Every structure is written in structure tokens, then in C-alpha cells.
Image (spheres, rainbow, N blue to C red):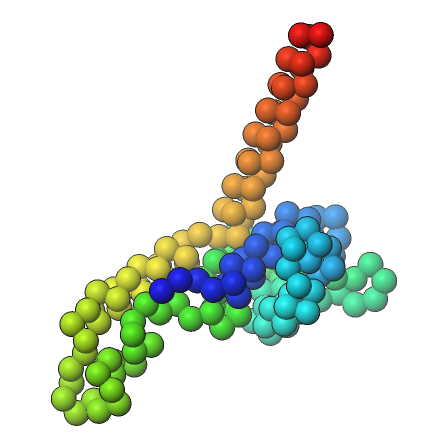
Length: 160
């Protein structure tokens, strides 16, 4: 079980949007270029995100997308569920018919409860991480990189 590109790209694009929306609507073309994600794929993902009221579109010149709610009120689980990403590690897709469609015997595969518990833990974790948490994490990384670059150029400058 792993997250597909649909979920990873949706989360990545939402971080990009949240980082830049304070300067006005963010274009999908810009996100596409910065994150190396197909524009047509982003259009599909953002259509789903808009229908789930996670983003809102702004039409016309200077248009693009903004968050429909504050970043701290959007969780990773919200994003992944909005783009129809399955969060299920069970063999049966959570239907309980691990051994075929005959549920009359009531048998699940031997590891069904293990994977069902993992599903619940995954959803709980992804629901505990907000988009704002991820934005703060990125801002911290950017800040650390800028400090390193400044420090390196200072060392190189004084060593000359």
C-alpha cells in the first residue's frame, strides 16, 4: 500500500499554493512549472479540490486559485480524500470480503484487522497534519537554506 502520485501531487500543489497566495491568486501554470506537474493533471486535481471547497478559483486577468479556508483548517486527509485517493491498506478495499464476494462465511483474511487498524492510524495521522504545518515546515527549510548560503558567501568573501 502506498500513496499514488495523485495524492502526492495534490499535497505538493496545495503547499505551493499556500506559500504564494498572499501575493494574490496562484496560477496552475506557475505551480506546474515550479513543481514539474502536468498542467492538465493539475486542472483535474484542482477541479476536485474546488468541488470539495478546499480551493476557490478567481477568473479573469490575474486569476488563479486561492485557499477557500485558512491553511490551518485544511488537513492532509482533506486534500487526499478530495482527490479520491484511496487510503486503504486492506486487500478487500475495506469491504470485508477478503476471501471473495461470499460474506456468508464471515471470514476475513488473517491480516484484515491489522490492515484495517493501519488505515485508521493513517487517517488519524493525516487528519492531524494541517496544510499550515507543511507550509511552516517549508518556510523553515527555506530560511535554513538562506542562512547557509549567506554564511557560505561570507566565508568565501573573507577568505579571499
